[in-house]
Amino acid sequence: MAGETLNVRVTAPDLWREERLTCAPDTPIAELKAMALPALLRKDAVDPSQFYVEYFEKEVLDESQSLADLGVPDGAVISIRQFDLDHPRPFSG
Image (cartoon, rainbow, N blue to C red; front, side, top):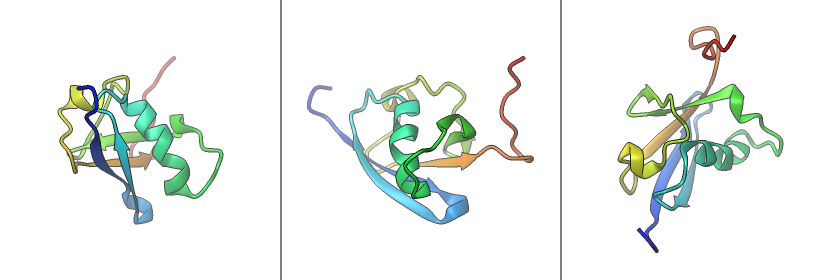
C-alpha cells in the first residue's frame, strides 16, 4: 500500500457541495470526514460529531475503519450528512 493514493469525491448532498480529496487507503473514515467538513461547510470550526458518513447510501457506523477496510475504490463517492430529526445521533447513555 505504500505510495498508493485514492481520489475520493466527498459530497454534502443536502448542500449540493462536493470536495475532491486524495487520501491513502489506510485513512480512517473519521479523518476523511474531519478533512472534508470545513471545505464543504465553508467554515473553519466544525464539530464532526454532528455529522455522519454514508457509503453506498448506508451509514458507516464504525468511523475508525479505513477506506481500504470499507473497500473504497479510486473515484468513489462518500457522503456526509448532518444528524437531524429523521436521522438522530445514536443514543449513548
